[in-house]
Image 1 (cartoon, rainbow over the protein chains, first blue to last red):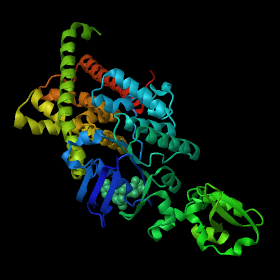
Image 2: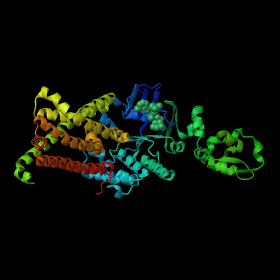
Image 3: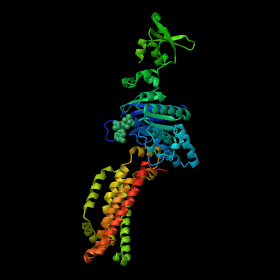
Image 4: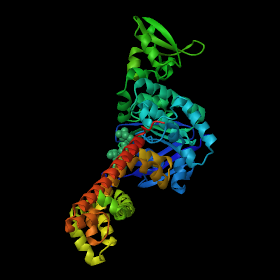
Length: 320
Length: 211
Ligand SMILES: Nc1ncnc2c1ncn2[C@@H]1O[C@H](COP(=O)(O)OP(=O)(O)OP(=O)(O)O)[C@@H](O)[C@H]1O
Ligand SMILES: [Mg+2]
């Protein structure tokens, strides 16, 4: 299970006439079945990184492997058919109906019509679009609905790997959240390897098993959301994740990761009122307790209600 | 009216000649313009000089063009076709280029990225989307070709121009009127037909076809 689906080996991409590489000497291992989000400012090379995987761009140097095999060894379109690609600009075919859009790759694969129909039905359900949309054209759908069709189309040939470039880019917060939830469901259900580019720190944290933080063509950190938050690799990462809504971030940090373990706690905390939370509680709930009048310390307790550590106001400020 | 009834066989023959000359021009011109445009789309640097050259060709007066061609290939339908095809290239190449360039690049990237072969991408995606503008070019080409083809009768290429020239030389208004009527009728009808086709292609490309 822990086989690497995608491997970057010293990959550099310098566009013609560009002063510096868009992606620089990158090494990366994406485990099969993992959901990796890619975060970074505009122009830092996120799209370029993705597009080298399905060979829309060729690396200037270095190698990329998929399931242990170098990607240049596959016939180009065979490689691409195995990789679902949700493009930054959606790119639905405007002259084809929704079902024709989704059926594009199954038709290339010469699936029998019945199987294609079943696949379309299944995918529309999966992305929560009504079956009645089949005969519509992209222009008759809202932006969010179009992005769902883009997702369904990319998954039509049942690719093991999905590259998603800001798939929920221009979508309002509410629709976006429901699409994110759908993505998590889909990932759990179908166990695909997903690389997902986003500008949105919250989105990256919520969806990613691991996060790639990029800057200037270089990967700054490749870690779990918690590690990125708790131990940013450098100032850039720290600034990026901090500049986002801090209150929401508190949701992602567990109390036990922020507490002062009991053995190093002095007895000074006897004055004032104390409250207790479980190890797995978020720092958000700790903050809410600390904001109550008179409360000066929150104890972190284990399953047997035994205190294992404490968090004070000062401690909380240190952590965020 | 009398003239038309008496000479209907000649009128018919000349009209058929004219239509043939126009259609032959269009088909051959398209067969040249399509690969040229596809090449220009790959090698962008040539686009401006080629369009400039085609523009120059287009502004050469037709009489001068025929006078230049006759010593090279003689009289008849050959120099007429060559001249008409040369004139057609401007509108055809220009609109073919504009048509393919009008396609949103995300659409093509999505198609390539999902693994469509270039032939399939061309026929299923690029051509239908570029078609409205291409038909616009064909419409301009046909109307101008119908017009210029009348002058081609001067070098023995036949067509309705024969009526016009004869009418002028023989001072025969009936011939002139019938020639003018048929030529402009042809131009107007083909313009209207292609205009409808263009609108239909546009609705299709935008996905506004109601089923
Ligand atoms: N086809 C191209 N030709 C030349 N330069 C390019 C090309 N595509 C991207 N670049 C350059 O490479 C760099 C990285 O671009 P890339 O599209 O990967 O950024 P990104 O991180 O996806 O940005 P965004 O968040 O805005 O989508 C940029 O400086 C960009 O200008
Ligand atoms: Mg991008």
